[in-house]
Length: 355
Image (cartoon, rainbow, N blue to C red; front, side, top):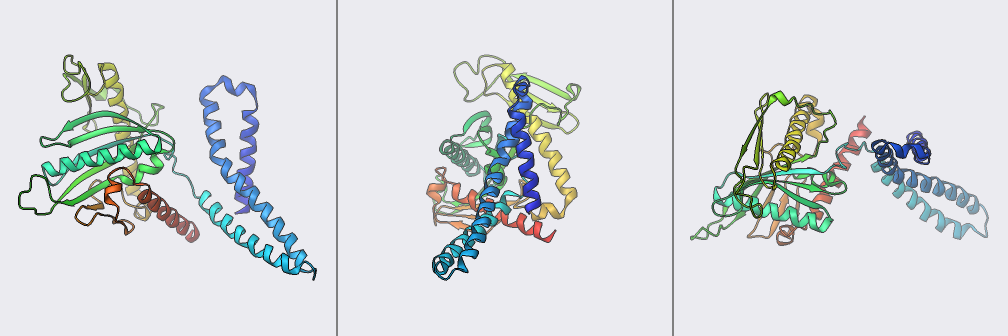
């Protein structure tokens, strides 16, 4: 561990030296890249320095124990320092877990009503509201990309972007099938119905060549927007549908005012979907590593149940239950997300120790 920490400290010092040179500010992209890497390493370096300081203090306390006049006080201090050492070791172990390269990215979220007809679409709308409320609480920005409203309310499908610091690190666990158990407003007999909506969370992919899209592989259709989207949205042919012919991937955007803006948003969604397909294929080839993850991210995987009669939410991947469904649906999903992050870290630590 110490060897790795020394290497990280050395790299951090190199980055700090780079940032001190005026010429780096001539290349904005390089400066951003170096600043981000430096920022990512800073907390690990700070904890390592704190850890070394505690080790020195422990060595001093052990010497003091040998002095009869200082022994009592030194033993108490030694006990406190040993606890602090253990705590720092645990924190550093987590910091040394390899980072998901997508954690710092914005996300594109797609929610679809699935089994359950109108009630599934209404539930999809409830999930959209839950995520937008969560984003507001976190200081994230939500941008609507495309929506198809359900006949009885909610959405048959809705896509939106969430922008902010480390959004993907928080929302990446939300991909999968969400199940709701409740009495629908349209149910006159008061019977509980089970419906589902699927959620797909994709990291935003920059147009930097990682995902190559040949313009000749695209079919772009322009048509008149429908539904919500602001004054004048229905008066011009501004909605854009892009079909990626090799994979038959179709994306649509109609919520921006202009055709150019809708095309830009649609291309963002297309890049994200093609990246997601690429990642799914790689993970399927890895097999065992994929199974060790919290959830596969597959739409068909049932990840969570929202039980309204019992005011209960259960995440089936980690067996976590909270009896605060009303608060959860109002955006208070921090508790669930933190539990998922903690479990993910435990599994990764266990995997590292086995290696």
